[in-house]
Length: 98
Image 1 (cartoon, rainbow, N blue to C red):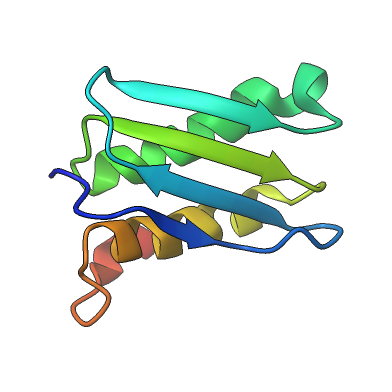
Image 2 (tube, rainbow, N blue to C red; image 1 turned 90 degrees about the horizontal axis):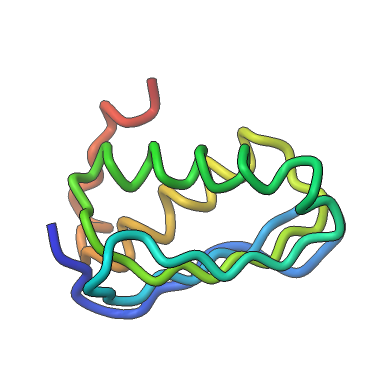
């Protein structure tokens, strides 16, 4: 699926993550800001990539500002951002919550 519009989910509060998705043309292009990027950057990107693949997104620019979010928070914020970006908020894909 192609991203229809730029979308954002999350906050800049402690223990949260803000994810912004926009249309891309070269796979997944990450811009990651995190104090723990050296330790957990790959895991953060992997979690986001898995969610994007569940929605069959192939290309996206992904801006991530992590403030110490747990993996489940990253997944939830990514799901919200993807549904907004694909304009499917009214018909969510519940099966991705597995």
